[in-house]
Amino acid sequence: MTELVSVVLPVHNQGDHLDGVVHGHLGALERLTVPSEIVLVLNACIDASAEVAAELAREHEGVRVCELAEGGWGRAVKAGLAAARGDILCYTNSARTTPEMLTLLLLYAVAYPEVVLKANRLIRDNLTRRAGSLLYNLECRALFDIATWDINGTPKVFPRSFDKLLALRSDDDLIDAELMWVCRREAYPLVEVPILATIRHGGKSTTNYGAALRMYWGAWRLRRKLSAGR
Image (tube, rainbow, N blue to C red; front, top):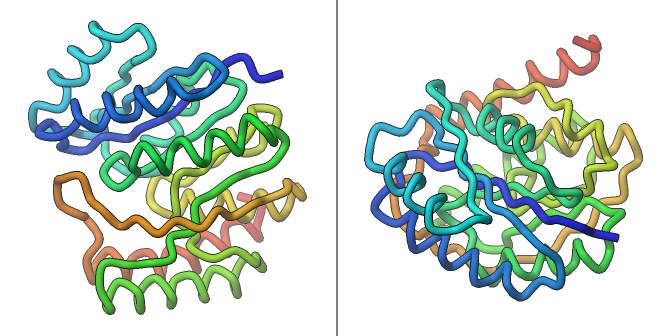
């Protein structure tokens, strides 16, 4: 039986819209039949995010904050999961996840707690992002022998009992590919939930051509590292 749901939200320079995002998610979490918490991970923020997050934690018992001096999506996800207390764990992109998306994935997770759930975004912002995403996903499918699409799609939700997912090592965007590889290796059941929304709450995406090339090359390096058992 599920006793607590933890939602990890990495935050990077989102002080201008963080309050609205968190209040939206708190409203969504009220629809669950179990208690929940939100863990805000301040990911090398240099704006007002820390002040906004601290105020949210003061206002809401179910909001907690941890702060990282060094950035990185994977680093923030790992720190949030380590701080989370729930027996159902979720992490998601705080700039792009709507309350409705979060509710959908978590309702599935409460009803079916012994599977890994992930969003599969069916729409991208523009043709360039669609092409770049397709190329990266094809690369990951070939390198890691996984059958899923939208490797980086969030929310991602899994039970704490799948403890191998709490030992991920990647500090960057490759943590999502590593998670998918671990699911295949450990035979964790995986369900993809189609999501149509592409709305960005605010802030600026850090994905550009340079970042994309680093991810393509990083996937090769990750495959070699995992194969070597390092």
